[in-house]
Length: 232
Image (cartoon, rainbow, N blue to C red; front, side):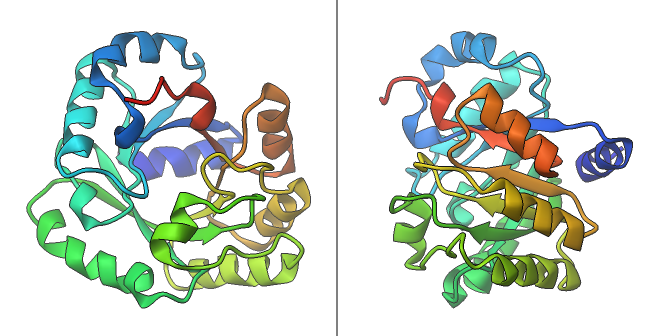
């Protein structure tokens, strides 16, 4: 069974997913074993990637994780250089919240030569960056503005446009280290509009925030900063 099919079937069964996001730029592979021991037992996926990662770091990080964990490892690439065949699947992100063609389709085209040489499962993902109260690395690198969380209808329509364009996931992102996560009212509104699985991340640091996101309709929650090891 494919990795996306597992996510879809979990959604249909009402089972919630938890992904831990690992940024290779902030991860020390010597701490892999201890890191994996501290993440929640209910973790279902490991996401690997970051907005700006040195060449080769993603592959080294994935290799270290795969040696110590049986959890699915999905790439969450900030650009085409982070694609590695060592992972299990890749979130093929299109930054629909921005209007920078490089992150709408440019990086995707540049990734094709790498992807064609791998057996990675490709999961088309509509990626929406929302305002989390600070300037996120995604906004800085992509040179795009996040969507205001006050513009709920715009967010809903953008997410639904992603589904209409063929995305298999919608990912609502408040940004790494966000001061506040995606509002539950937005999660609920998007959930009610789309038919594909909904992933929510950014600024979710506590059990209460995680449960709130689930209750509002998130099929998978992504947590990262709260589990990050000390910076290299």
